[in-house]
Image 1 (tube, rainbow, N blue to C red):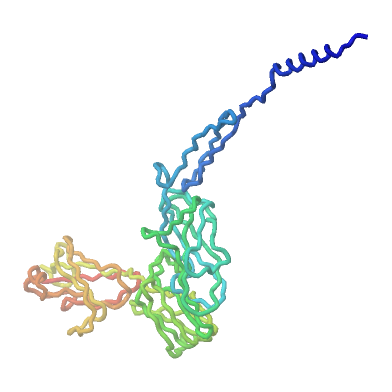
Image 2: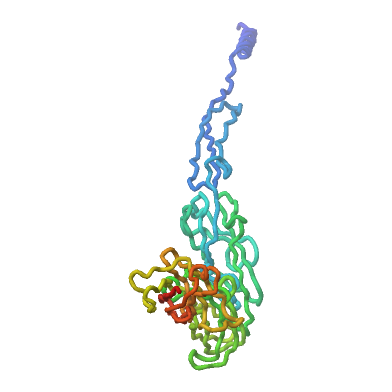
Amino acid sequence: MKSVRPHIFLLSIVMAMYACSAPTAVPTETAQATAVVNTVAPTDTPIAATPTSTVTATALPTATASAAAPTASSSGTGACVNAAEFVADVSIPDGSVLAPEIAFVKTWRVKNTGTCTWDNRYSLVFTDGTLLTPYDRLALPFVTAPGQTIDLSLDMTAPIYPGAYESHWKFQSPNGSRFGVGKKDSPLWLKLVIASPAVTTISGFVYQDLNGNFKYDFDDQLMANREVWLQQGNCGLGGARLASAKSDNSGRYLLAGNFNGAYCLNLQRPDGSSYTLNVIVTKGQAFTAADMQDAIPNAVVSGNVWNDSPQPDGIQQVGEPNLAGVTVLLQLGPCASLPSPNSPVPIAVTTDAQGKFSFGSLYGSTYCVSVPTGDANNSAILGSGAWTAPPYGSLQITVQTGGQTSVSFGWQYK
């Protein structure tokens, strides 16, 4: 039997050599498509930027940097500007006195004076003072375009302890920046006083009812330095006068004391009339709806000065001309031969080219209208002569609110 071992050994060597020279499989790097999304950060511009999706083919393992999309900024060209202007305290004006722990609604009226449109991405945020709400921010409830106004209301609760309190709020834009109102970037603020439960307060505005609806509106004229006094019992009963206060520069007055029951508020107006209001309060109450209506100066006194000749009868005839450049005086109160040191200073006007004069924006009241002959200007025009109407060149008149009264002066030259 032949031996086969040498052949087997030779075959093993050949196979081993073949294995050493055969190609080896190497893992191949596969290019992958990777999506890179660059999202533009929110800005003050009301129109949201469109996200840009950039697809970059990257051969791994080598990384390729992709350029990020530019982000608009408030200082960039074409970006809008946030700005606001305070218009009015719709409710709870500065200095309001409230009882402890009562719920109330504070409303500011604000105008968008910038170029950005405010939407619900904008909010009103608490910045300083005392937080009187259960939350510290309020998303704006309405879209407000540039030039429009918005009323912003917060549900608040008065503090427990008596004293003065302030709560400051500002706007916050979608990018987190904050801005206030006016050129000084001031916050919207609430300033109130919490009264002691034992003290009753009565407050309100003194106003001119320009639109004639018998209630205070924000387009009415507020009046300072007007005295309001409180009388015991209902109006017309002649009760004792208990307290008084004058309206401040904001037109608001405040009466405080141990009041409990029925009272009469009285405003003595410049035209001599009075405005009264019945109120009923309880001990410790803060009564804030006692607005008082002042008189409106809408009366007019007008007339002319004429040359009452050649027929000096106190009646202007055809052909009797008016006199231009004559000084006419109007003084509050009755005419007196000798004015007292306390007499009001008269108002002076000069007759126009047609010899006519007019005093407007007057309160209904009693006045004295006169033409002073001793005046240097009048002496040069009138010379020597005498008045034919009215006698002595003066006339006492009573003007009604909203009324118009005519006065004519006839002068006879000598």
